[in-house]
Image: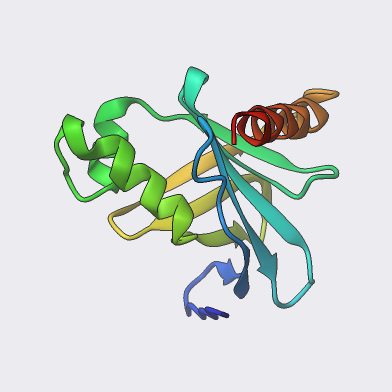
Length: 147
């Protein structure tokens, strides 16, 4: 199932294809999108215990931002706090993200969702990408053991 998007503006838009579904049972949510033009696969993730939303290519680039509950409620369509977890998880299940990279700035990445856009800042921390993926594997292993 592919979803290709094109956007005309002063920013260049990456065309993306839905690749892999989210980790629907984990507190660490993630989904993957493949860049149609460059074939780069981007992992979009949510670290629940720190309220961190991020995107990484899994190799050299990682972008993150702390998103408080009120902001997530807005991105989910101004839902109540009681519906937030379900709606936030659905955004990942549906891989409902559009990634926009600015031509002149590799330090910022915009992620568009149905009800808003968030700008993520690039993180330059050695070992950070590895830690994110280790956390994903650990969360997956906990789910696999309990099933």
